[in-house]
Image 1: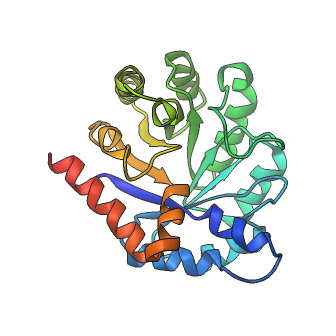
Image 2 (image 1 turned 90 degrees about the vertical axis):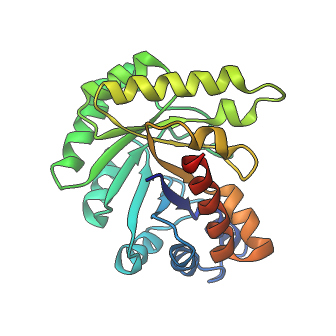
Length: 240
């Protein structure tokens, strides 16, 4: 089964534009679960530009599916994850001046630091994945940290104009290599209702994390329906 993790960060982005209580990302998460989401993903950024710690605390208390917490590889964020106790954690790169995560984590250049963070969280029963580019050396470095899995960055595929076959092939090869090394494989970034099917057909991927396109669709049809539509696409991809 291909799981769908729904990232609700941008519900909080709209809320933070006015610094008020609505829209509530927790309410959005519960509606996403009604629509069939297999998990809820949030990125607690160091600058707290959208999701706040209180949001994660409330989500931990209310979400019935899996809660996946994305975060930077820092001691502060590791301490927060130990306190908040998500089911899963995903270490991602983070820069203050980016609009969204722009690339994968360079695990190879900071392997000791990443390994320490992975061991720290997995010792608390939190499954850890690393958000990386589709690059064999990064996949090998990820395995050496002891991480449970990797999330392959699909942004280059998603953003490619015209023929996407080369970028799709790059993702598929990376996914297959990661699986051969024994890592659980997820995918995400830039996926939407128009481009998700080829990625969803890659058999070794067990989870896709999708946010912006679902939140954008939810403005038009509601969160529950937006998630239901994406789930239907994933179902069709695996049945094809």
